[in-house]
Length: 385
Image (cartoon, rainbow, N blue to C red):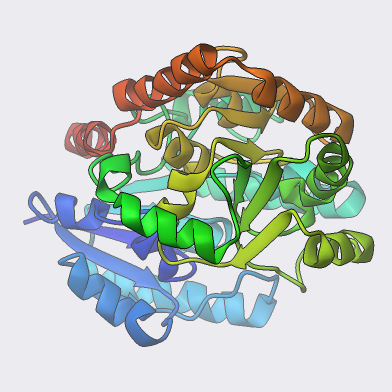
């Protein structure tokens, strides 16, 4: 059986971003997972066991650490020479650069890299130039590059990061699609929702907007909190549910944002949650004003729960959401636009809201079902020599 090695910077990418994909592929190939070690039930050893994959631990960091990066490249090179894989397929920026370089040096014929976001989009000056160079280098080492959205593909081509012939998009986009059996409204019991509403002090007459994701600047949280703070003065029944954790080291929120977020009576921060489904179930609409994305799982999850969405006009988001069809598309970094879109959403008639909700579900069920994405990726592997 041919060997495919998948590489990510941290093991959580296998249990979250790519959950179930290696297990599906293990019916056709011997799968090997490589990442940093992780810990507890999120360790690479445990995740690999769940995914029916072998594994190797290679320490990788998300920061620029030249000496550690060189050590990682050498260890990856040794593993690739020993394993002689049919394919090395990398995800996440650091794993992509180190993995593609090591695979090229080791003579691996099929070197595949998936692009699930470009942090450089928000960078400027010398940092932007450095990130551009790293991106070009990664794609140079790869034999195929898979942007996980059409918008990302356009950005890559616009910046001339690689030859257009190297680029392909699997299915309709997304790294892993969405598991519609798991993200299913019917899986969440009504009594559990009533209990959660009581716990969070949400009444039947409240209109709950939800945000799910890291509470950081480039997710648009500063603008969202300012917009909602003003919005709630006019609309008494509006509440904002925030599901996600702070990241204080990378891209922290403004102090005034944190102050409002933690003290506003109608903003409900619940922190990181292992299971986000009950929170989607009690909400009426998603607000996701991110500055940049690859292909946002959160928007797909919201659609699976029949939620219309307010999203920024960026790649991925504007491929899932069509304006006034299954949500509203707004400009990036525009708190007034967030305010106006929330006002439009709350003003929808019950009939129009139901129509948008149904459109939201159908949009992802037809194009982003996980099984479709997996089958298309399998076909891509099977085309390789």
